[in-house]
Length: 235
Image (cartoon, rainbow, N blue to C red; front, side):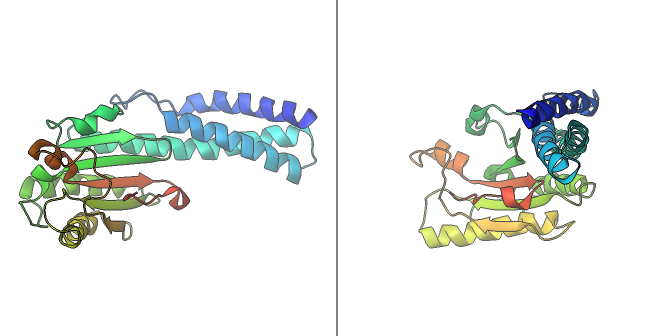
């Protein structure tokens, strides 16, 4: 019970610290969900570590909680900041509406999640049919993301290519790999991104119409703060 009270106290102080990361200049998305999550997680972990490694008193728990909150909040803020900077660079905003990926008018969708940022590039703006060579405007857009990533050398980058189901699975697997690799080569400013071709796995919508197949043809870029949080994009 005593430790529980100490952790609660440390967490409360940490949430007060969390407000320090809420800067008004990033206008596309002011929710900073990952910052809040990072502060809370860091506070709890720091409290326990501080209690166990210190003199096992409230002071040690609170100090540990504050240090943990600072670290967790900084990581969360960095990802929030990246989401907004990437969106600005691409001429759009952060859109967390799940239906945004189903809107054929959107060639680029930037979304925030608890542990990563995802960028969807529609195939129609990226590649000619059957090609893995970026079209000029698409190359310009991907280079914009690379410029942002230079400011975040700790960010873990993943790239995945997706196709529709026209043609064989193996043909589409090779095409999706080559398209992902083309984008990955440009984004390798701080190290080689994790790259994967998914063929027509993980379709956004059923491949039962030309409109739906166009939605499924895409390249997705993922920005993570923690390598261990990465998941298989094809599943």
